Length: 450
Image (tube, rainbow, N blue to C red):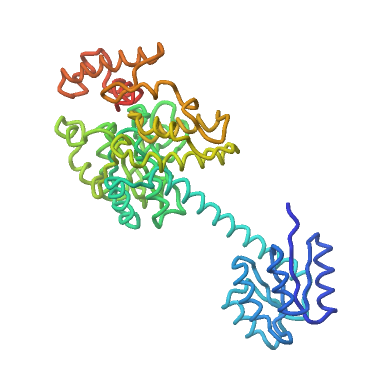
C-alpha cells in the first residue's frame, strides 16, 4: 500500500513536532506548515491524503484554510483541532466540509483511530466514484451514443422512464444493444445500488424456467435437495432483465403476470407467499402480437410488459453511428489490452461503413475487439479485418468465401425458403425442416437472421 501523505498545520512548534513525530512512527509521510499560507503552498504542490489543522492561528485561520484546500482539492479530508472551549467553531468547520474534529490536548490514540477511519471512508468514496465512472462509460455510453434520430428517440424515451418503476419492453434484432440499454436504465434509476439480475429465457429449458425465476423448496421435484432462491428474490429492490421474453412458456407466463400485478409469488413446491420489490425490463427480437395471435403469448402479460416500449433500429439502418461506435470501441479495447491503437484508416472506415452487419452492434464490437488485439500498427487498416468484409453482394450480404461460409449460406437459403413457404410462421417452417421451433430460432440467431 502506498504511504499516506498527511499535512499537519499548527502555529505552535511543539504541538506540530509531537503530532508529526507520532504519525511518522505510524509509517506515514508527514508535511508540516506553521500557517495557512504555507499550508496552501504545500497543498498546491503535493498530493495529500489528509490534512490535520489547528483552527485558531494568527493571520488566516483554520476555517479560511479549509475553504482554500477544498478549492484546490475538493476531495481531501480535513480534520480540525480546537480547544475545548471553542467546540462550536469545530462544528461550524464540519458544516463547511471538515471530515471531523479533535479537542486539545490531543489524545494520540484517539487521533490514530480517527485518521484511520477518515482515510477508510475516503477510500470508499473514491471507490464508489470510480465504480460510477465505470458504470457510466461501460453501460451508459457503449452502443448508446448516437447520431441517429430513431436511436436517439429510443434512448430519450427510456431516460425519461428510468426513474419510475414502470416495466419497459425493448424490441430489436439480436445484437442491437437491448441488454446494454437495459443496464443503462438500471444504473440511471434509483435502484442503481441494488442488484441487476439478467435472465436469458431462451437459454433455459422449459422444465427449469419456473425454478430459475421463482426458486424452489427442498423436495419440490427430483433432485431438489435444498431450498433455492429464484431470480426474483435475488433482484429484490433492484431490476430483473428478462431477455428473449417471447420464448417464455405459457405455464410460466401466468406466474410472471401475477408477480407484475402483485409483486408476490410462491416458490415451486412452497405455500408461503413471498413479497418482492422488483422492476422488470423485458426484451425480445420476436413479434409478440403475432405470438398472441397464434396463442403462444398471453395478451394480458404483453400489456403488463409493454407499459413503456422502445424499438432499437438495426445497425444497417443507423450507419451514421458507425464512426462513433468505431471510435468508442477502439479506445475501450486499446485501453483494456494496453495497446497503442489510435483509430482506423480511411480505407478501413470505408470498409466498415459498407458492411451490412447481420450481427448488428455486437458484430461491429467483435470485429474491432479482434482487430485491436491483433493490431500491428497504431492505425487499423483493411488488413486488420476479415477478407469477406470487402466482398459485398448486391443485396448487402458478403459473398461466401470459405467452406464454413458457403455451408452457412446454404443453410440460410434453406431456412429462408422454408420461412417464405410458411408465410413467416416459424412453427410451420420448423416442422417442414424437421427441427423444433426453438432449434430453428437458434439457427437463425447463429446465422445473424434472428
